[in-house]
Each structure stands twice: as C-alpha cells, then as structure tokens.
Image 1 (cartoon, rainbow, N blue to C red):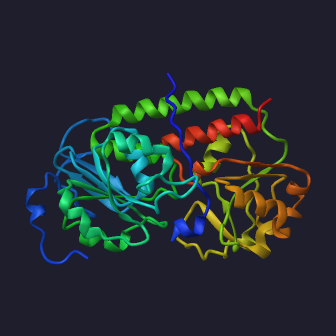
Image 2: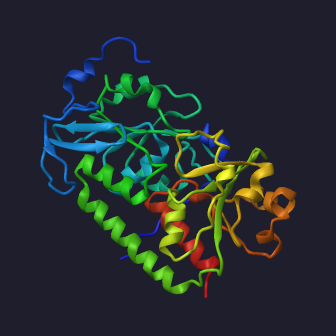
Length: 346
C-alpha cells in the first residue's frame, strides 16, 4: 500500500545551504552515551539485532547507545524528515525560515513532512540562520541528530552537544536517503518501520520505471542557484542522481576541468559548484533535469544565456522537478518519482 504525502520545497540553494556554558545537569540523567571511538560498551550493530546497548557506525566514528532513545532533538532540518518517516520520537527540530513559498510551513519545517511534524507535536528548536544549540537542553534529549555538512550542519558544536546527549552524525550528502533512513532507524530501534517505508518506495519506483520512457542520450542533473551565481551539477553520489540511475537514466560525466570550482564546500560529495561561465562546460548531457525548480529557476534556464544557449535547452530537452525535491527523504523522494513519471511518461 503506497503512502502519499504532500510537500513543497524550493531551490534557493545558496540561502538554504548557508555554546553551551558550564556543565549540564541533564547529562547525568541520559540513558545513552556517545563518543567517537568508544567500542566496549555495547553490542556491535547489525541494524536488525534489536538489542540494547548497541554500537552504531556513524559519519563521525562509533556511537554507543545504552538504551533506546525516547526523546530526540534534531539540529538538521534535512535529517528530521527521515526520523519522522520511521516514527522516531523527535520532539524538536531546527528549521529554515518560515513561510517560504514552496519550501517551508509556518514553523520553517519542510513542507513535505510538515503534516507529520504537527501530528507528532514537534517544536521549533531554532532557525538555521541563527542557531542556538543551548535550546536543546530544555528538552532533556537522549539523542541529538547532526548533519556532517551543508547549511544545516552543527559539526562545529558537536563537542558542546555531546555534553547534553549522545550525538548521531550523518553525512547525507554522500549517502542515499535510504541509507540515511536505515542509520536513523538503527539508532532509534525503528528498523521495521524503515523497511516498510523503503519497501513502499521501491514498489513506487518499480511502478514509475514501467511507465516512463527514459530519454535517449545522456542526462545532466542540476540545481540553479537563486542568487544568479551559477548552478550545482549533481554527482553520482547525489541521492537525486541515484534515483535517476535506478530508473535507467544514463548520466553525463562532469568534466574534471570544472571540479575545482568548490566554493559551496569541498567536503560535499553530491555536488560540483559551477560558476556562470562553467555552466555549459560542466553540464554536458544531451538532456537536462533541473531539480527543485521554482519559478526563478525556470526563468533563469529560459532567459539567461549561460543556460538558454545550451544545446539541451535549445532542443527543448529540459525537464524540472518541483521545489520539494531540494533535499530527499522518504516523502520528497516519492514526490520526485511522481514528477518524473509525469515528465517522462510513455
């Protein structure tokens, strides 16, 4: 049975992509402990063993949890969606700015999981533009989610956060949304829920694969920067590209000559930042897929010569996915499949 959720997201990538004082008494009451490199406190994680304590391999070393987390705070707006998808007990989450058309609700939560967040009574921890990790203390969490990189990362504050609770660090820029979901499920004891949502997605993907005609030639996937500075070419490590490859798309190679253009962050695996002069040099596909495209992205591709004179654009071989596909989780991955089914229908 396929689960459906409505969502909206935007591609103002640059804006989105953009201390604890004293000892904290809450630490004494925590039901789990964390570190990078602790190895003797629990059962080695197998993802489905179900026992506690358990040790999990994270993007920042090993994390040992003594008991199943019951109160989770997310400092990553992106990771919150995957946590909610498996029913993990998230009580508070970081957010983007509220009421951004096609991106966020009145709390600044991503639209694709806004309904789930409200049903779970998730509170706003802070806005990513002005993070205050000290706010996590009031929730007395026993697990804190942190993104390793990107605009919602709090890696610089991991040491302080560990004074509050164990910290689960995930690099979602280099993993599929399914792997992110499995990791969160393993850390929270919600493996069966993860299997369910991933199985639902796989059935959805198989259905879409039967209904689409994959375009001939190669395809370049990209996101257009809303500030007019260029675009991001999506690499094979991008969750978006992984979906396209699963559907049978043949992806164009990103030339090495543009890969030094990394002003968005050299530590990211999922994108190559392209300045305006490198748009066509970096996007060599016979077809273009513009991911997370708002009206500005549509207008930029149609009217800005850096984009509009590209062979794929002149030939009318450009398709777009809606704003909610900016960051992929279970909810937005389903929305991307629906969009592709419509754009490439047989």
